[in-house]
Structure formats: structure tokens, C-alpha cells
Length: 392
Image 1 (cartoon, one colour):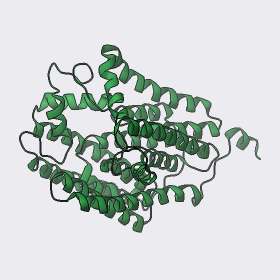
Image 2 (cartoon, one colour):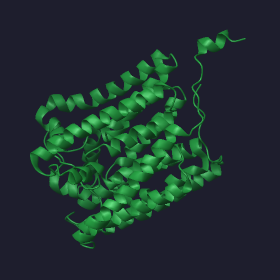
Image 3 (cartoon, helix red, strand yellow):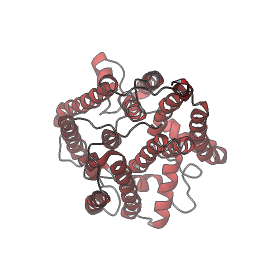
Image 4 (cartoon, rainbow, N blue to C red):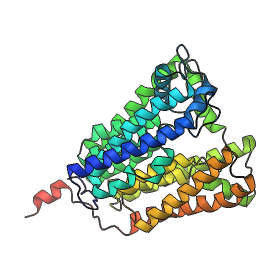
């Protein structure tokens, strides 16, 4: 039996339509603003997409991974290639990907509204959605993650695994949700369900990557190499820890340190989430929230766009209104500081003084939500079916 959905209050089909319309209008306005702020060369833009168009020179006869380097997973690269083919200009790529993002966001709105009721307004008109939806393709990975959780709750395990794999081909974070969901099935004696989910997730990731890994191994591996050479970035908690401890923050030594610490922290964190799920301390939605929180907080890289992931998760597992307001406030401050600095509005001294405070506030909300997820919910594991059948 699937876990009962955590709803705030049920919504009618008419309300769902209103949510979708509100989401579409919000994002259409935001996309228009982004296009206006993008110049013809793509050098000035809020979104990453025009910059990628200018730097990577992807186009007909120049396929990502095979002919051109690209630092994102393969589905993201092919989506970008398709956008370039449709509209080969900085603003054109932004619009093409933006339209796809708007459609995906509407899909997320529908899924969340049906599963979580009125709480889905947090996604439909959420401030982080307005700020970051068009930075790249995070909304597509979020759609895959939310759809995977819904499929899992409906006991469609192979589909859930395939969706997690598909999301991983766009952004890596959906894959950390797979181990806890596998553990959830195993804890209930459903080995077939666990196997279907795990194998389908791995199969989709392998099938998506193999053509590029075989076609041009070095070009495909460049995405891994690129990320591996990055030290801890501003916005990540690890950067401030390294700075406090006097550890290397630049160069090869800093990248090597950040790689080792982040991989170990993420691995151990996801393992703990998996064990908690297996022991009945977490239901699927809360396990997904905690696993993604571990991935973000333990990572050496933190982009403001990662906050989009939590908007959807904070609908699936609602957080108190005051925490939601605090999260959105910290998110807005980070946006103003980071993008204000890039566009010459915020000076470096102001950035250095205020960014750690905003990053810390955002982390406190995420950590508090994660701890509350484990400690205070009343969910209890259902008994295995065999045992239930023997009960008179």
C-alpha cells in the first residue's frame, strides 16, 4: 500500500487550473524579462544559457561530447543542442529552452497540486521559481523527480526508477533518491519492486551515456574532468569551513581536497538516509527531501538555482510557513548579492560580508527541515503482507 499523501487541503480541478495559469503567467513574464536583459552577443544575461551558447559553439555539425566539450550530463547537452538547432542565437536558445521549462513547470504544478493540495501554490508562484527557472534546465530534472515519487507511491517501481535515471541525465541530484526508495521496498519484503526500481534507474543512465562514451570517450569524460577540477565554490558550506580551518581554497590541491571530502560526505550521508528509510524512520517523500539535502549541503558546489529543488520538496513535505518565508527571504538575498555582483550593482566587500549570512540562513532552514523530517513525523512502517495475512 502506498504511503498516504501529505496534503494541506484538497483542491478542485478548477483550482488546479488556476494554479497552472498563475504559474504560466509568472514564468512568461519572467522569461520576457530575461530576454530583455540578454544582449545580442550573450555576454550580458541572467541565464547561463546565452553564455553557454557563446562559449561552447554548439550547433549543426558540432554535437556536445562528440565534437564540443560540455560540462553538464548528456540529456542536458542534447536538449541544449536541440534548442540551438531551433533558434541559433543567445536569446533564441534562451527562449527555446524557456518554453520547454514553462511546459515542465506546468507539469510539476499539476503533479504537486494533485498530490499535495493547496500547498502546491508554493511552487506555482514561488519566488525561487520566478528567480531561477530559466537559469538552465533544473525544472526538467525536478519534473522527473516529482513524477518518480508519484509513480513510486502508486507502486510503479520500474517507471519510478526510469524517471530517476532520466532526471539524472539532466542533473545529477535525482539519483541520490534511488537508494532510499530501494531500501523502502526491501524493508517491506518487496525484492522485486526494489530490483525493478534499481535496475531501471541504472539502465536509463547507462543507455543515455553509452553512445557518447563510445563515440568519443575523452569528450564524454570532459564533463567529469571539468567538475573534478573545481574547488569549493562560494555559496557552498564547505568553502567557509575550509576558509575557517585555513585549508587550500584554490588550485589543484583545493580541488583534490574538495573532491574527496564531498564524495565521502555525500556517500556517507546518503547511506545514513538509506538506513533510516530501511528502519522505518522515513517515508518516501521525506527520504527524498533528506537525500537531496545531503547532496546539496555536502557538495563542494552550490548554485543558487539548487533552491528550486527544495521548492518542490517543501511542497511534498510541507515546512512551516515561517520557515518557508525565511527560505524565500534568504534566497532573494542570495540572488541579489550574486547576480548584483556579476552585473556591477553589488561591490565585492558587500558580497563578502553578506553572502555568508544569507548562505547560513538558507542552510539553517534546510537542516532544520531535514531534522524535523526524521524526528517529528508520526509515520510507522506497514507490516509485511504475509504477517498481516496470518492475523485474525
